[in-house]
Structures are given as structure tokens and as C-alpha cells.
Image: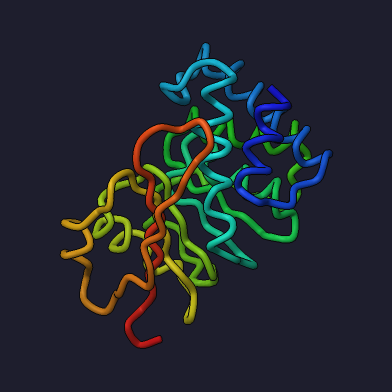
Length: 206
């Protein structure tokens, strides 16, 4: 499993240390363990967890930067925990309203020693903290809904970003007023078949 993760990180061109890779593998093991009871994700088996979750999350790193990052609808901690491990200088907030999943996130942060991560166990619209320079989601909702519920978290000059499968032409045609797509980046995720796109958005006033 370690070689598969190493190779994927090499293909993505990322600079991630040995200790961080070990922490990513420990996180994968936690997902697999808790999945048996809490059904965190439909993905089963370490091979698929590495490709469909870890590498899929890490693939965004060449295209984004942050000081404070909010992961909306974090679920099993994706993409927030992989980003927090690979970028220990970032402060990451995992937002997850499902109580069982939020419990997993807290325990994972403790076991992985992630001092740069906090968990908000409630709905995103109930978090009042407009101080994030990156607000990201991976499997939260349609783009317009994501912006409507999460846009208040983004500080002036910050970015909203979301991961999609095929190019989301229809969703982009319905962006809320005042929001523009800065770029839509096609991603090649090692071990993952099918299209992946990262949509990066900002306020039109910036």
C-alpha cells in the first residue's frame, strides 16, 4: 500500500515527507476500521481508499493554497484531513453535521496527532466565521447550493473550490450572482478512472 501511495504522490508531483506519508496510511487504516461500524464511505479496501480518497484529495494541491481552509461536508475527512497532513502549516476546519462521522473525525485527529485541525459538528450555515481563504467541498452538493450555504465563510480575496466528475457545464451556467469561475482544472488522479475537475471560484468584485 505504501508503494502505491508513494507512486501516486510522485505522479502528482507533490512534495510530501516520509512521516506525512506514514500518517496518510494510518488515516487510511482508520477509515477502513471505522467503516465496518459507521459506514463512513462506500469505498472499501485499502487500494481504493488510497486512489479514490487520498490521491483524489491530494490532486488539488498544485492548484490551491491556503492559510485557513474550511472543508464543507467533510464526511470521513475528505479532502480536509489529507490536505492537513500534507500541509501542516495550514489550519483546517472540518464541517460535518452527521454526529457519527463527526465523532470519527474527532477521534482521527486525536490518533493522528493533527493539531492543525478542528471539527465543527453542525450544519455549515450555523458556522459564523468569515475568515477562511479557502472553502472547499468534495461531495457536498450542487455548486450553487454549496456557494449559497458556504459562501459566508470565505474572506475577501479568498476562493471557493469544489471537486466534480465530468465538466460541470450546467452547474456553472447557474452560478449565483456575484460569483465567477476563475478556472476549471481537469485532474488526472492515479488509479482513478473517469473525469475529475476542480472548480475554483471567487467573488466578481475581486
